[in-house]
Length: 214
Image (cartoon, rainbow, N blue to C red; front, side, top):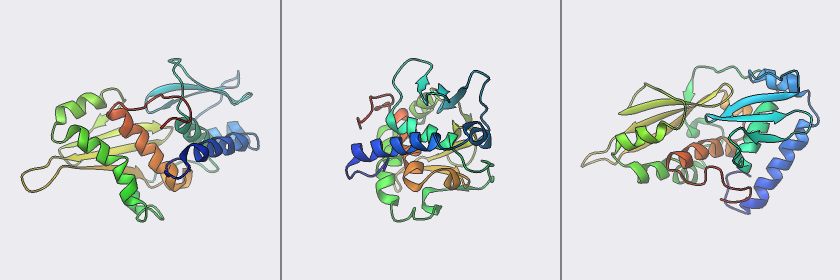
């Protein structure tokens, strides 16, 4: 519901309402601990989403960004879904693509069009500009490709980026990899939405727009 284009705004609202309702039925402290996040004595949770510091009140379910800017409805939903982890989030150390997730192959093209393709159109073979765009996020360089980097997304979930330059014969490519554990935390469309938030940030589009927009 977060990612598909059909009735997108309603789907996102329903997803957020569901995530909020879920918080009222669980032991939040225990669930957050599953994701490596602790609740402070005042009932607040401090966490980062793609490098942006957030504060979540376990009593009111209010989520705020420390920078004071609005939190996008997709990001709020992804944060609540992570905080409601039903089991320990322990990275497997095995990186996979969206294609490797159950059902991922079926949605591969629309996901590519709204994630990797956006970044490829923006940067092409301009790795210096891509590196500059990455500087807004905490990240570590390394890995295969002409530019490889790992960006902390939320809690114990990272996004691994592999960018390969093009030449006269082949176009550049951009792959987004996830630890296999991501499939036990998020639904398929939520994994896609997580990747999309990073890609939109890299090209600086709609990073903190009001709820229901984009």
